Length: 183
Image (cartoon, rainbow, N blue to C red; front, side, top):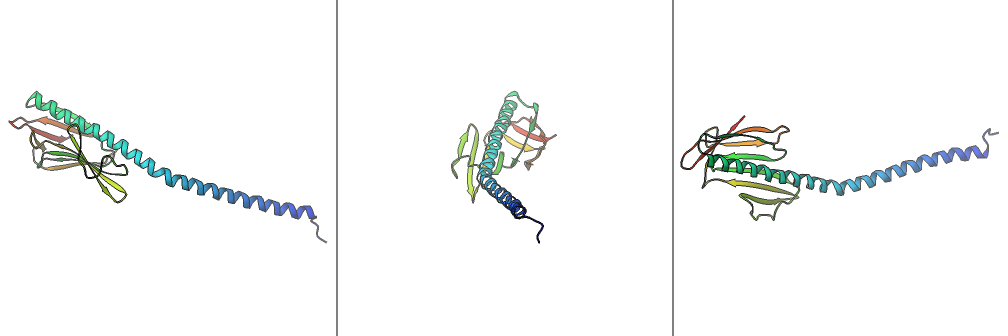
């Protein structure tokens, strides 16, 4: 004879049913969380990129105002700047007298392939698959001779967790020579 009564068999299967329900509810919750994240994560990336691009506009404006200030104060003036590059690349192009910030972004900063002026900054967004290549350029080819360490060379500041110490100086001349040095 079976020592278990009819109620004991039922309680054992009832316990198994509770575990199966718990597993099913947990799987449903994980699927819902995964679906929410798949829709929310791109929006979060887009907002983060937007924030970085807005900070980059501020950085470029700060560089521009420093250069203008140095050119007005005459030869021999020098300023130290801390430049933070959280994402993307800041390029000082001495050969073409340009300062450019470039970043691949989830955020469409401006109308694709149409240059937009933000003060003296020219912003150009180019769509690439699901991303956008955003270029912000300060063009000094008609105003100043931009150099890095006294040479018409190309220098890039890449993404870094710590700010770069950059010295900007006015070296003089009829077309003022604005020189950048790393600190």
